[in-house]
Length: 80
Image: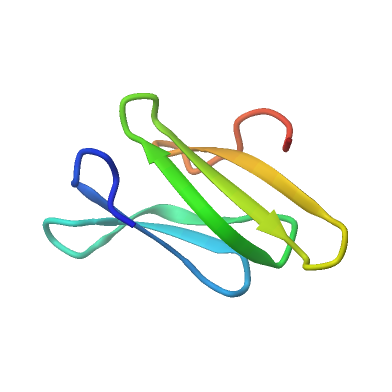
């Protein structure tokens, strides 16, 4: 998924890891972001707010939304 400004590409893998990439040179930005649950269902990005929303699940009864800071690659607040 490309960010709303088109400068970053966001990818996520089956182990729940999110990665940011510089869309102009193909190099990773920051560190990998790993949630507590196994799978990422979807992500949304807002560069103006500097935030990534990621919906995680374990396909059982547990789901959570994590807000990630795009600059620090750290979790913003408690999962929802």
